[in-house]
Length: 142
Image (tube, rainbow, N blue to C red; front, side, top):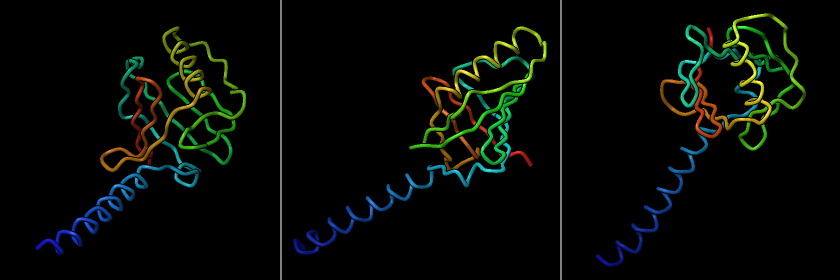
């Protein structure tokens, strides 16, 4: 019985380590997961969006465009060590919208300039972005 424990315990330890490693890999996002895709927010916590608005991210080659109810903001983007951020100075259209929507645009410019952790968890969402207490869950747009 003792020899069985000596063999079984290391085998269980190895199996558990492999399982945890495979789960961690499932949540990693790489550039190929994002390129030429459009995602729309399904849930935002840590910040209230303007009623009736959502966040849309469009990855078109090296450009990430974001629209959240007023202007479209865009810049080159990078995904480095799991962090998604604009790698250049964002440009934006200059639509005159309600102040709430313009404030929301400004918040998103700041958020994507600083960067967010990107993950692809198993479950009902396709992409999760997090920074501080902000969590944005997004689904691919059909």
